[in-house]
Length: 283
Image (cartoon, rainbow, N blue to C red; front, top):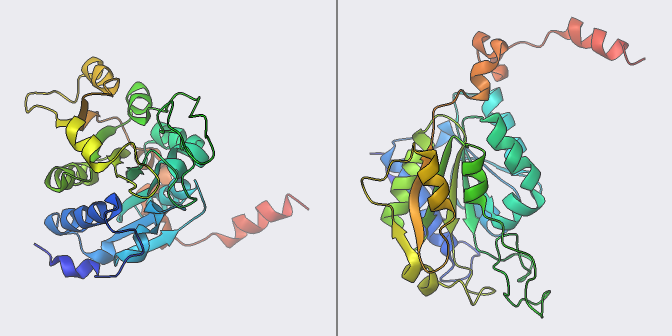
């Protein structure tokens, strides 16, 4: 096993008790157990508290725009398929500003893993309702309570037959490590929606709230059963299932491109003559 220290030791700016600490701890542990050397992993994010993760781990890091982490992560993987690519950001970044890119990533099925920290609130910008904030939740910008129904990323992903769909809880680190490892090893777009309590701005969905409700899927659960996955994806309230809800083996986007058979784009030479012809066509 690779020493976990290879991935760096940094002082973070997250609030003490924030679920993001445990997610980062779990990611380092998962990478160590998979024996992935730091230079073989690309870590891409958008903007937000969770999106600070690349600052606190020694990997090839890229911090992009708000909601735009997934396009960059897909570009990295298509340019160099030899890299293990992990995108990491929050519920607002992935499901709000980046909601269109989230849907497109499921459809494209590029081989990468998305770790979505689901705080059910906007943490970086001080507590506005996010797409996953529950109806009725009172926030600074919704003093009468949230009127919109909550977005269910798991149900959407399963409906679209996303290649790998899982949910986890930052308060259950051993289980989270196991789910992360399965997601990273899966060939195709893998979503891991992670309940990560925001102790500063979400006083409803606390550590205790999640701990009381989250339960691990049983060993005999079949994640290839789409109907069963749809049923579990709708289960949210007094009981919330965590684990791998659904997975399939449909072809990835990079497997469909003939030009990648010649090797990674990052190693292919640019045909300047063809490029000149393209530029001339616009004159």
